[in-house]
Amino acid sequence: MARLAYTVLLVALLPWALLHLVWRARRQPEYLKHWGERFGFYAAPPRQPVIWIHAVSVGETRAAQPLVAALHRRFPDHRILFSHMTPTGRETSVALFGDGVERVYLPYDTPWAVARFLAHFRPTLGLIMETELWPNLVAACRSRDVPLLLVNARLSARSARRYARWSALSRQTLCGLTAIAAQGEDDARRLREVGAPDVAVLGNIKFDIEPPAAQLGLGRELRAAIGNRPLFLCASTREGEEALILDAWPRDSEVLLAIVPRHPQRFDEVATLIAAKGFSARRRSAQEPVLATTQVWLGDSMGELFAWYAAADAAFVGGSLLDYGSQNLIEACAVGTPVLIGPSTFNFADAAREAIAAGAARQVDDAGALVREALALVGNATRRTAMADFGRAFAARHRGATARTMALIEQVSPARR
Image: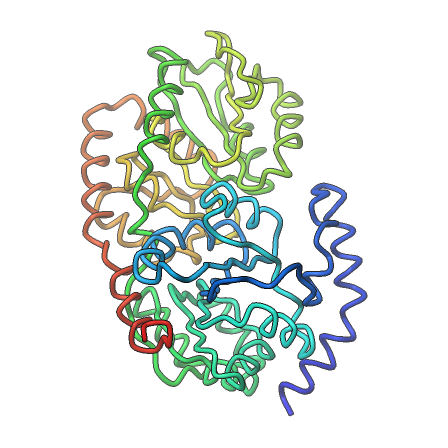
């Protein structure tokens, strides 16, 4: 009955979902493409057996990199299919994997749409990255004997409260999964509290992402482009954070401020904001030289975040200054970039807490404290070196989740036979 009520509500909301796509398309026209896929209609069926990975958007797609490599090695006769919910997630899979994978939008979670999706692709195995629970999709996989695993799973206290409001549906959905692999003990505990019958703690796959050599090389090029000037990076910033940082940033600082917004559809908006605040700026996409008088460098090119981390003397990880829950700080630690992070860390609570304890990161309360700490850190080479060493050691210490996840996949996957 819980799933029936959910389905009735979902169908009633479909007109709003379509309007939402149109609304989002004002800033990101890609939302108008591939509408048929959102209802389970796809092009030619695959010619190879399919292993399917659902990665809702950018973060989940990037996190899947080590897993994709391991799956290719273990199941070379299978084609990997990514399903996404956002255009940026889809674009990220293009940038990371090119033609090495297929990619589509996951359909809305109506019984008939998910039935078409499964009948078309006939996956031998499904992997849901992090936490995307679709009750009808889970039930359809179970009825068709498609093993479906929730991997690299995380569940914040905020999300747990939301799932608890639909306790019967949450329990039914979680029990329909073949296996659950959580990032940490806190995630596992919350998943059990909302109805998961059995949860393995296997660590965070994001620690296994190796900085690409090409990105490290690009980082050296970015660094060379600014000469001897110190560079402070604000990475993966979210709406509202750039204004706070710019208001606190001193106009007479010799330190070059780089801002890389999280979402590409906001690049122009942030460029306009920087100009409105009176800063002299350059856009990375324009390939213009950074001058001695340039105050802000806007990182508005896709797929270069590792390069920015490699180029920076220190970095703030966005989504943490306001209540977004933080973006991924592991990548910065892995390349030895000292990290500053704001008060909101619920999306990376374990990683943030452990990075701070390890000396790889420092936490600040607000934009003013962030700027003061950034300028002090950039000016202290001894402290930066120590934090860089702590960061690399912290990242190395937590690797291995991919191998553990693959071992779990081996236990349940018919593809292994």
